Length: 355
Image 1 (cartoon, rainbow, N blue to C red):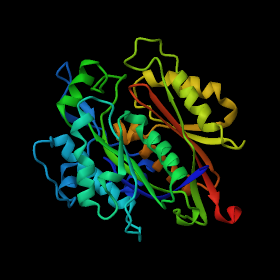
Image 2 (cartoon, one colour; image 1 turned 90 degrees about the vertical axis):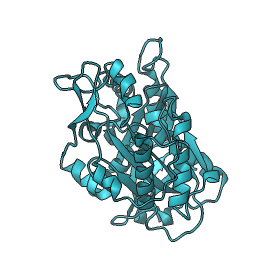
Image 3 (cartoon, rainbow, N blue to C red; image 1 turned 180 degrees about the horizontal axis):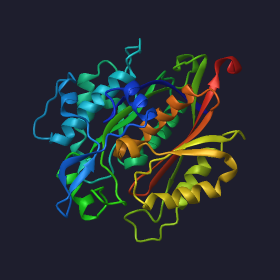
């Protein structure tokens, strides 16, 4: 399978309750950063980008909360339900859709978030079934890795649709404390740290161009992603050289023609650590980019959204391509705290030219 196409998008973030509201806020440069009720190691309040509690109260869902739901898992599950419903809102089909879910790369979520898919099955009928789903525990890059799984799935089936995405939040001291101890979080007066955010974003993909989402006679195609590992990742003792992202770029660019990349959508979150690898990847693949290529890093506005990052960046790049007649190709990449790196090329295509 050479291409998959965007058929639907669902999103909920600290900037908006759906895809349209979020993209409008991002385009306007609105930031959702605010001082939170969480505190770091120095007893200073942490800057976060959280969704108001009132938004969660408005999401209609039946949850079997039991003992597995802490506050964070409750929020993650409700966000996932809302965004899956939006992504599938125009579907006429009642068939179960294969689902690949991006999950955090932290040990406490290996079991704790598994019930999320069970709750999706209950609340997002008829499309979701646990038996047709797979979880990918590689953090920020997992969304792009999920697209890679979607390509493999499309090669071996005749399914009309595939759903990928992630939902994540930092609203729990079990998630916050280790990051605070590593001095990674943004506090007042601190320049090197990230603002924890929360979001969900799911993408409905199709291998059939007739089922793709259209705007002014155009569709957005996803080329096969590049997936690689960084030997010197954040928790590795090996030297950090940025080679993982460089290889992800090279793989993503392999099947794309010579027209230049207009923008890079990046998972950089405000920590200085991430700038080096982008510099390496960009320099070693410079011929693929326009001289005026822009780098967008939406975490500056809506915080670091963890395992929702990959799908959210793709969604924002889709909106930008549809809105700008002079742009036709973006590169999206996402890097995990652990080894995984993922990159993908999005291309705007005219139905008239294809047909």
